[in-house]
Structures are given as structure tokens and as C-alpha cells.
Length: 121
Image (cartoon, rainbow, N blue to C red):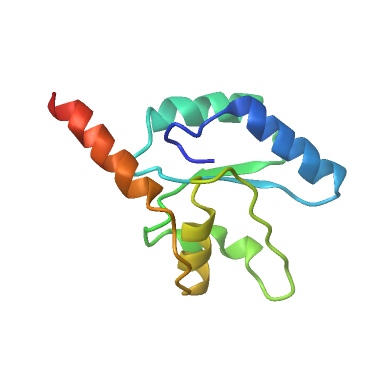
């Protein structure tokens, strides 16, 4: 999920239930930490509701720390599946982790401009 307007804990709980019922190890990656709304508060809410075995990270998918933080799940022979709504940052994550260049919907830029416009009024 994105830490922007996409943040919904009930949806995340459904994603976790799906992952656990499939027998896979879930890892929560919250994108847009650089432009998110109340990132620390949302991370607190999340960690209060997550089972201790599930790790969660707030990351900027365009930042330098992404590959380092997610390295344990990116080893050869592992499969990574990204679940999230449209605009959550899945393509941006894929591009950053694989050095590819899928087009993204530009949601990040539109929301950032909107947020900046609100802050200046």
C-alpha cells in the first residue's frame, strides 16, 4: 500500500489473510514514505495490528535503501509477488528492484503536486 491516500488497514488484513492461507511468508512494504501522510502514526497503527512474525517497512521506492532493505526476500530461487491497488507503487518497486522501465501511471507526481498545492494555500 501507499502511505498516501491508499492506506487502508482493513485491506491490508485481507492481503495478509490471502498470503497466509496460501502458505507464503508475507512482508509488508508501504510505499511513498517520502510523500506519505502521517507516516510515523500509520506505521504505529500497522505494527500494533500485525502479527509479530510479519515484517513491515515504509520505503521510498525511488530511494537508495530499497534494494538493501528487501535483499533478504530477493535472493536467487525466491519468488516475489506484489499485491496492491492501482497506484500503490508496484510498478515503481519492480522498476527499482529489477532496473527495468515499465511505465507507471504518474500517480505519484499528481498526488505530490496536489499535496504541494494544498500546503501553499
